[in-house]
Image (cartoon, rainbow, N blue to C red; front, side, top):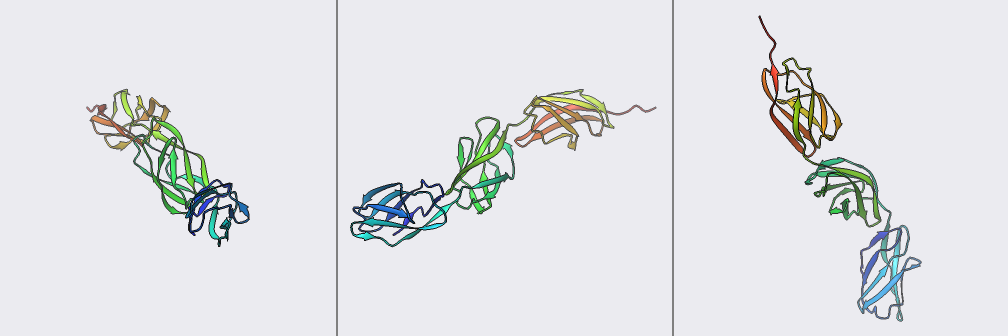
Length: 248
């Protein structure tokens, strides 16, 4: 007598389908010593029932006027616990794969990022991988993992849009570097790096539209300024000019 699914939440509420023979007139379905909260006799070969709360492994039996069936096992699964996200931010377009760490993850069927749901790959009971779906708008969303034991949320993932660069001021300085520069644009609060012709520059985030940067040393001439965040990069071509010192 197969039962599908054969596992569900410790809190109960799992709709299971039981198939077999001579099931007409079913009067009761029990999960261990507890009666199912709802029983529907679909046909002589099929019964549906909603599991009560429980723990561990229990035997499911069906009772008809002809007697009670032999038990088949049903496994109660606790709700999952998420401890961390391997990566907590990424591009608004999605498509990147992240790791979710926790416990009770082996029966995971879905991971929701806000209102959008993705199907995970189960690595182990303590780890999932999932490809992040596209987001609606930049900003944080809740991450919810659903397993046979229920759902759990409490972690956030931040969707990040590609940065833009509007101004670099001042636009020139000595080849020795050390010039304080303000970069303005959009989506700058998640900046990972700033480079001047490929050389990393120290920076600090002022707000979503402003960065404070110190130029690294560079060769005389113009330099491309590139701002990068988890969603991508913005290049301000020839936005800064390195000026060689005078010689006599």
